[in-house]
Length: 222
Image 1: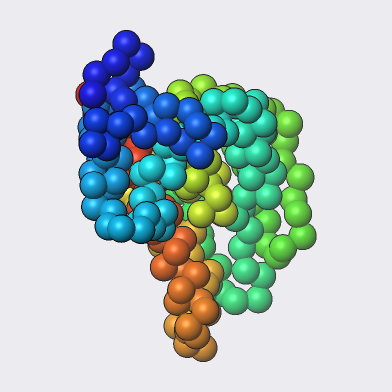
Image 2 (image 1 turned 30 degrees about the horizontal axis):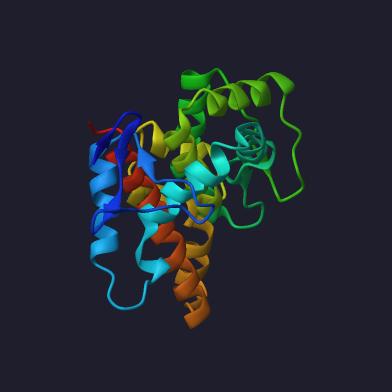
């Protein structure tokens, strides 16, 4: 329902509140309606795992809005050791895939945010330039509340700020973001197979990335 500060989510005319007891008011009607739909789909018992939009909306209001600078710092820190800056030193086939999938994202980040990140072989942390890291932090800090929330979720799920930024900016879609973030593991699965734990974990990460992308899409609608 429309309110002075946006669109409130209600169930049976009763306002929905976040876990921190904040009234759930969102700036986008489309997002508010989608969150309401998640509530309407619940049966006798509420299942939070079936309500990814509600979870992200709650994170936005309960956490990101109240400690924005801390969230910005947490997200920006991923640039210090970003996944896409590291190539496999002893697996030429994997290194070739990494180069093909990741270098174009690094080139895009350089052009879009003036943040050239260095690349290395191996897993030993490579110091990035202060200018590049400052540029990445400025990029993160510039986003509005809901976009920052989606970026945080995508960065955590992808293990890469570069991939998450490309997703948020529309350079890649959610499926491409998942594939890029899971490139190493997918390569190893092709060689050795996949166990049930890997399957479950990868499915959960994909759900998180898809949810972040949908949340952002809805947040940007009227």
